[in-house]
Length: 179
Image 1 (cartoon, one colour):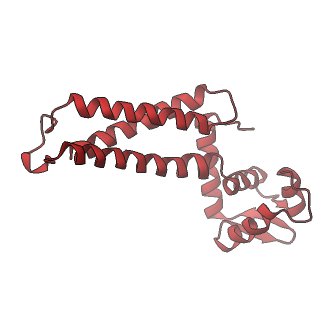
Image 2 (cartoon, rainbow, N blue to C red; image 1 turned 90 degrees about the vertical axis):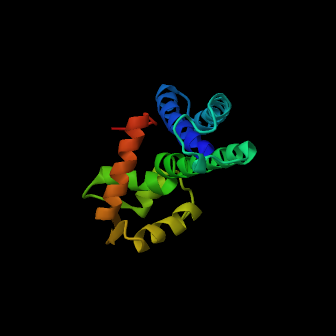
Image 3 (tube, one colour; image 1 turned 90 degrees about the horizontal axis):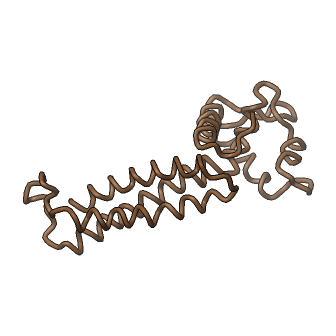
Protein backbone atom coordinates (compact mmCIF):
# COMPACT_ATOMS: atom_id res chain seq x y z
CA UNK A 1 0.00 0.00 0.00
CA UNK A 2 2.93 2.33 0.69
CA UNK A 3 4.08 2.13 -2.94
CA UNK A 4 0.59 2.84 -4.25
CA UNK A 5 0.11 5.90 -2.04
CA UNK A 6 3.57 7.26 -2.85
CA UNK A 7 2.98 6.73 -6.56
CA UNK A 8 -0.14 8.90 -6.31
CA UNK A 9 1.84 11.63 -4.55
CA UNK A 10 4.60 11.38 -7.17
CA UNK A 11 2.04 11.53 -9.96
CA UNK A 12 0.54 14.69 -8.49
CA UNK A 13 4.03 16.20 -8.46
CA UNK A 14 4.49 15.09 -12.08
CA UNK A 15 1.32 16.91 -13.12
CA UNK A 16 2.25 20.11 -11.26
CA UNK A 17 5.82 20.17 -12.58
CA UNK A 18 4.60 19.37 -16.12
CA UNK A 19 2.12 22.22 -15.96
CA UNK A 20 4.71 24.81 -14.93
CA UNK A 21 7.40 23.39 -17.21
CA UNK A 22 5.18 23.54 -20.29
CA UNK A 23 4.10 27.08 -19.45
CA UNK A 24 7.77 28.09 -19.26
CA UNK A 25 8.89 26.07 -22.31
CA UNK A 26 9.21 28.10 -25.49
CA UNK A 27 9.94 25.28 -27.95
CA UNK A 28 7.51 23.31 -30.08
CA UNK A 29 8.40 19.76 -29.01
CA UNK A 30 6.28 19.52 -25.89
CA UNK A 31 6.84 15.80 -25.50
CA UNK A 32 10.40 16.61 -24.37
CA UNK A 33 8.96 18.35 -21.33
CA UNK A 34 6.77 15.38 -20.40
CA UNK A 35 9.59 12.89 -20.95
CA UNK A 36 11.99 15.01 -18.89
CA UNK A 37 9.60 15.32 -15.96
CA UNK A 38 8.93 11.56 -15.77
CA UNK A 39 12.41 10.54 -14.52
CA UNK A 40 12.25 13.24 -11.86
CA UNK A 41 8.89 11.91 -10.67
CA UNK A 42 10.37 8.39 -10.57
CA UNK A 43 13.38 9.67 -8.60
CA UNK A 44 11.04 11.50 -6.22
CA UNK A 45 9.08 8.26 -5.77
CA UNK A 46 12.31 6.34 -5.09
CA UNK A 47 13.46 8.89 -2.51
CA UNK A 48 10.09 8.91 -0.77
CA UNK A 49 9.87 5.13 -0.78
CA UNK A 50 13.27 4.58 0.80
CA UNK A 51 13.10 7.48 3.26
CA UNK A 52 9.69 6.73 4.79
CA UNK A 53 8.77 3.78 6.99
CA UNK A 54 6.76 0.88 5.57
CA UNK A 55 3.62 1.99 7.41
CA UNK A 56 4.01 5.68 6.43
CA UNK A 57 3.37 6.48 10.11
CA UNK A 58 -0.36 5.79 9.76
CA UNK A 59 -1.08 2.55 7.84
CA UNK A 60 -2.41 -0.40 9.85
CA UNK A 61 -0.21 -3.49 9.68
CA UNK A 62 -2.73 -5.32 7.49
CA UNK A 63 -2.13 -2.73 4.71
CA UNK A 64 1.67 -3.03 4.85
CA UNK A 65 3.05 -5.21 2.06
CA UNK A 66 5.51 -7.72 3.56
CA UNK A 67 7.83 -7.58 0.56
CA UNK A 68 9.46 -4.15 0.07
CA UNK A 69 10.44 -5.13 -3.48
CA UNK A 70 6.84 -5.99 -4.41
CA UNK A 71 5.58 -2.82 -2.73
CA UNK A 72 8.16 -0.70 -4.56
CA UNK A 73 7.46 -2.42 -7.89
CA UNK A 74 3.69 -2.01 -7.55
CA UNK A 75 4.04 1.69 -6.84
CA UNK A 76 6.49 2.30 -9.68
CA UNK A 77 4.28 0.34 -12.08
CA UNK A 78 1.24 2.39 -11.07
CA UNK A 79 3.21 5.63 -11.44
CA UNK A 80 4.22 4.62 -14.98
CA UNK A 81 0.63 3.64 -15.84
CA UNK A 82 -0.66 6.97 -14.52
CA UNK A 83 1.96 8.77 -16.60
CA UNK A 84 0.84 6.83 -19.65
CA UNK A 85 -2.79 7.83 -19.06
CA UNK A 86 -1.71 11.44 -18.50
CA UNK A 87 0.40 11.35 -21.67
CA UNK A 88 -2.43 9.89 -23.78
CA UNK A 89 -5.03 12.26 -22.42
CA UNK A 90 -3.23 15.55 -21.87
CA UNK A 91 -0.54 15.44 -24.51
CA UNK A 92 -1.43 13.08 -27.32
CA UNK A 93 -5.19 13.66 -27.36
CA UNK A 94 -6.18 17.05 -26.00
CA UNK A 95 -3.09 19.24 -26.36
CA UNK A 96 -1.57 18.03 -29.63
CA UNK A 97 -4.03 15.54 -31.11
CA UNK A 98 -5.10 16.10 -34.70
CA UNK A 99 -8.81 15.50 -34.10
CA UNK A 100 -8.74 17.84 -31.12
CA UNK A 101 -6.98 20.51 -33.18
CA UNK A 102 -9.51 20.04 -35.98
CA UNK A 103 -12.37 20.56 -33.52
CA UNK A 104 -10.66 23.66 -32.06
CA UNK A 105 -10.43 25.11 -35.59
CA UNK A 106 -14.13 24.39 -36.17
CA UNK A 107 -14.93 25.86 -32.73
CA UNK A 108 -13.26 29.13 -33.70
CA UNK A 109 -15.45 29.32 -36.80
CA UNK A 110 -18.63 29.04 -34.71
CA UNK A 111 -21.66 29.19 -37.02
CA UNK A 112 -19.78 29.51 -40.31
CA UNK A 113 -18.08 26.12 -40.16
CA UNK A 114 -15.37 25.00 -42.57
CA UNK A 115 -15.43 23.17 -45.88
CA UNK A 116 -13.18 20.22 -46.74
CA UNK A 117 -11.11 22.53 -48.93
CA UNK A 118 -10.65 25.00 -46.07
CA UNK A 119 -9.75 22.19 -43.67
CA UNK A 120 -7.24 20.75 -46.12
CA UNK A 121 -5.70 24.18 -46.63
CA UNK A 122 -5.68 24.80 -42.88
CA UNK A 123 -3.77 21.58 -42.23
CA UNK A 124 -1.52 21.67 -45.28
CA UNK A 125 -3.08 18.78 -47.21
CA UNK A 126 -1.97 18.73 -50.84
CA UNK A 127 -4.07 16.02 -52.47
CA UNK A 128 -7.77 15.80 -53.25
CA UNK A 129 -8.44 14.20 -49.84
CA UNK A 130 -5.58 13.85 -47.41
CA UNK A 131 -5.29 10.43 -45.73
CA UNK A 132 -5.48 12.03 -42.29
CA UNK A 133 -8.71 13.87 -43.02
CA UNK A 134 -10.11 10.95 -45.02
CA UNK A 135 -10.90 8.86 -41.96
CA UNK A 136 -11.08 11.55 -39.27
CA UNK A 137 -13.97 13.51 -40.71
CA UNK A 138 -16.24 10.43 -41.06
CA UNK A 139 -15.17 9.31 -37.59
CA UNK A 140 -16.06 12.71 -36.08
CA UNK A 141 -19.36 12.67 -37.99
CA UNK A 142 -20.25 9.15 -36.82
CA UNK A 143 -19.24 9.89 -33.23
CA UNK A 144 -21.57 12.89 -33.02
CA UNK A 145 -18.90 15.58 -32.68
CA UNK A 146 -19.38 17.18 -36.08
CA UNK A 147 -22.25 17.62 -38.52
CA UNK A 148 -22.14 18.21 -42.25
CA UNK A 149 -24.40 21.01 -43.48
CA UNK A 150 -24.10 21.19 -47.22
CA UNK A 151 -20.40 21.39 -47.99
CA UNK A 152 -19.46 22.75 -44.57
CA UNK A 153 -18.69 21.06 -41.26
CA UNK A 154 -19.78 22.43 -37.93
CA UNK A 155 -19.44 21.19 -34.38
CA UNK A 156 -22.34 19.65 -32.54
CA UNK A 157 -22.85 20.23 -28.81
CA UNK A 158 -20.58 17.30 -27.86
CA UNK A 159 -17.87 18.55 -30.23
CA UNK A 160 -18.13 22.11 -28.93
CA UNK A 161 -17.67 20.85 -25.38
CA UNK A 162 -14.55 18.83 -26.31
CA UNK A 163 -13.15 21.70 -28.41
CA UNK A 164 -13.76 24.20 -25.60
CA UNK A 165 -11.98 21.89 -23.16
CA UNK A 166 -9.06 21.47 -25.59
CA UNK A 167 -8.84 25.22 -26.17
CA UNK A 168 -8.99 25.88 -22.41
CA UNK A 169 -6.16 23.38 -21.76
CA UNK A 170 -4.08 24.78 -24.61
CA UNK A 171 -4.46 28.28 -23.15
CA UNK A 172 -3.79 27.00 -19.64
CA UNK A 173 -0.58 25.30 -20.79
CA UNK A 174 0.24 28.17 -23.21
CA UNK A 175 0.70 25.76 -26.11
CA UNK A 176 0.73 27.94 -29.26
CA UNK A 177 -2.84 29.17 -29.04
CA UNK A 178 -4.10 31.74 -31.52
CA UNK A 179 -6.81 34.15 -30.53
